[in-house]
Each structure stands twice: as C-alpha cells, then as structure tokens.
Length: 101
Image 1 (cartoon, rainbow, N blue to C red):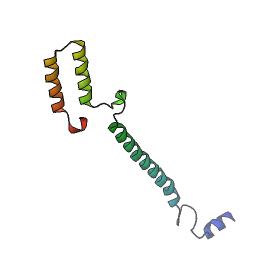
Image 2 (image 1 turned 135 degrees about the horizontal axis):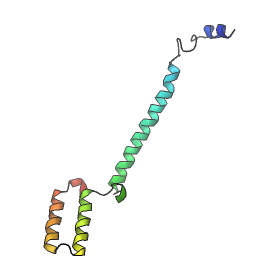
Image 3 (image 1 turned 45 degrees about the vertical axis):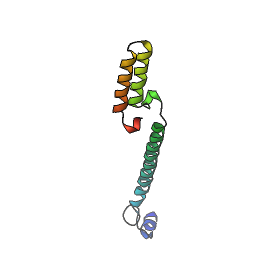
Image 4 (image 1 turned 90 degrees about the horizontal axis):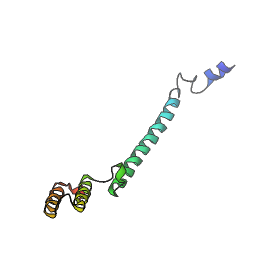
C-alpha cells in the first residue's frame, strides 16, 4: 500500500522526479547564505576595528605608528640624540603611506 501511495503522489516517487533532489539543495542554499553573511560581517568588523586603531597585540597598530613610538622610546632612553631623532622621524613620516598618517 505504501508503494502505491508513493507512485500515486502528484510529484512522483521520492528522489526520482519532481522535487526529488531539490530538497537537498535547500540546506545547501541556506548554508551558503549563512557563510556569506558571516564573511561579510567579519570583513566589515575587521575594517571598522582597524580604522579605530585596533589592539596592538593583534596588529592594530600601523607600521608608521610603531616605528615612531620605538624611535621616541630610544630618544627617551638616550640611545640617540635630538638631531638623529628628528632626522629619523622625518624619514619615517615621509615614507609612511597616507593611510598610516
């Protein structure tokens, strides 16, 4: 009796015709949508986070800022004099990209 019901179903027997394999595509579609939303959300979050400076332990500082702070520390410790500090600072700022300024 069950086989008679399956054969008389308006869409045909399961996985043979009609909607058959379409039911496998529905979960794949939603998985793709979730992955897409998660990827776009993560990219937006990382861009916003990087624009706000981020955390230095996770690469939030730019190379120019890090170099300037290192140079300032060396000057404060007396490793370099004021003339050398100003000369190196000028080189760092001249080579920094507009995004790092």
